[in-house]
Amino acid sequence: MATVNIYKWNELGNEEKARILTRSEVEIEEVMQKVKEIVKDVKENGDDAVIKYCKKFDGVELQPSEFKVSEEEIKKAYNNIDKNLLKAIKRANKNIKIFHAAQMPKDIEIEVEKGVIAGRRTLPLESAGLYVPGGKAVYPSVMLMLSAPAKVAKVKNIIACTPTRTKNLDPATIVAADLNNVTLYKIGGIQAIAAMAYGTETIPKVDVIAGPGNPYVSAAQRIVATDAKTKISFPPGPSEGMIIADEFANSKFCAADMISEAEHGPDSAGILVTYSEKLAKEVRIHTEFMIEKLPDIRKKYIEENLKKYSGIILTENLQQAIDFVNEYAPEHLVIACRNPRRLMKKIKNAGTICLGNWTPITAGNFMVGSNAILPTGKYGKNFSGISVDTFLKFPTYEILTKRGLKRIRSDLNLFCDFEGFPGHKNAVDVKF
Image (cartoon, rainbow, N blue to C red; front, side, top):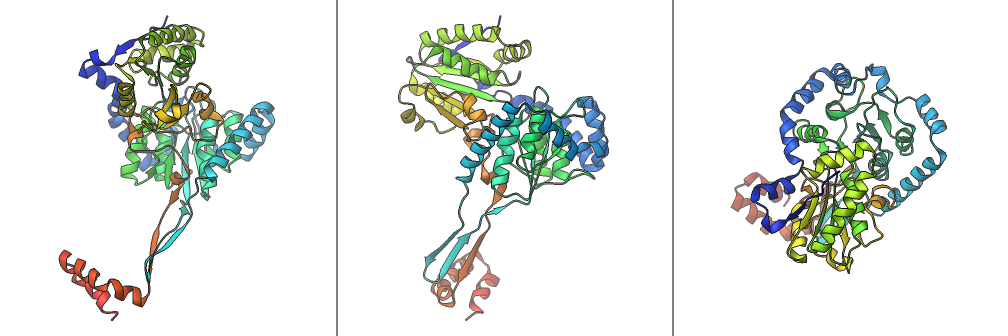
């Protein structure tokens, strides 16, 4: 039976605290050199390298002509998908588009002083590459969370890569891609990230890569962001769920939310943080009971991450619990406390926040419309989740009238003289 540890935060040593706070980021660093070699191979050898690594890692032998999902496969997907699931996918896609359409920024043009105008435009990137994991399961919801914002942002060319072990993709993933006019490729792992970053004979180079993945995929995205100068949404990592709870929280609900993210994989994390020892013990009992009811593969994942990254953090008081949350910067945070809206104002670092008893992480993951592709591994301190901004750029412009330039001429010249740029100064003075 799975054992859920209760850690008294004040009694932990620095090494154990670092392990909990750092979580799977250490695994990403460990695989970085191996990933660099594969990325370099794909960069230099294109489709041949992609074929080699698909065979090596996924056990599937694909020819370049088989990389892309065909029109015939798309038709079959619509014929074979469960009609109720199709309805749910369409509903989720609609909600995601509604929420992300509200995010679209407007162009700006202001006269900062008389005759001096500054502006900013909003433009879509030309192309986007989406990565949808598929090793442990299939995730049409991830396809929607990535493709709907790209579609709303009006990206012209959207492609996606997802792995297969059989040369065939599940109908749900194909349909989710097709709803947003995504060209889908049956390629996964490091080779998919490298192919989208550099381009191959078959797979086009893209301007931005977005999507979650295992430590190898995460490492690959970080490498191409530097080497290929490809924009990435944020450094992705394994799933995380955290619940901050007071003594009035429902212990069964807390246990269920812990499990919902921990079941993603052995490197995922499900954490409860509370100052109530009574609640902590109740949640532990419920969690261990619920884990036993899971399918063997999910049970195995949770049992593994309970040894390393998951568990219950017991703090001295609510403020210390809040401080822990802000230091951890979880991907998903549930506030299971009285007055969750008021407490939310004290949370500075989290990918997304679920307020109250009736807002499970699950709802946001699939159907609410807010994005579920979020920063992990402490990156919530500096990054936000996928949004339309992921697929946009914002060039600025300036317009000056003769009178406007004359008004600021003397101050411009002061800057030019002070910083030693006579050519800059001449570009102003020559006009007069």
